Image (cartoon, rainbow, N blue to C red; front, top):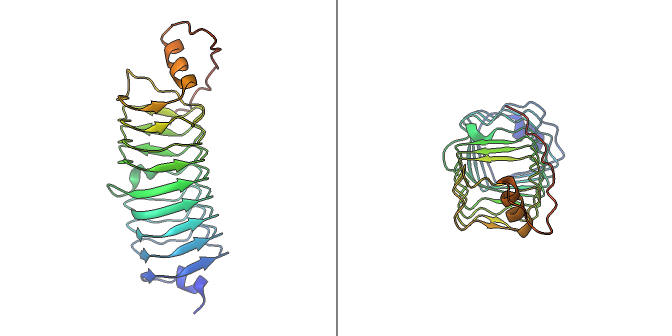
Length: 209
């Protein structure tokens, strides 16, 4: 049986590597994948209802608008993947995953436990984080232009080298959050203070969802 047939067949999968496969709109509902690698796999609009992924790696995959209803993600890594418009609010509680050099434009995170989650060098423009636990999260090198962050806990979150960051301390718990001087100046300017040497940049309006 080819790796494509294994990927698209019913049943659980362990320690397989899937490379250069078109699985557009494939349905993986209820299946389990353990220590599998997905490389250059087209998973656009794929369906993962009640699926379980444990210690899996996705590299250079297209996961745009995947359906993540009750999807369990434990120790999953995404590298250089396209995840446009994903709504990971629907995933199972307490997911553990990381993102590196991924495109997460328009992604939605609502009431998700993202404690210690790494978003490294990612594009998060126009995404939204609402009522999320972002304690000890890391956004190093990521672009958060137009991103909405509301009612989140950002204790010790690392946003020092992230760009386009706007944090409203009146709408989030920001104690001990690590931010850049530009971010701090932008917050001060948003409250009407005049910050010497700082030229405020107009923020794009976030699209309502």
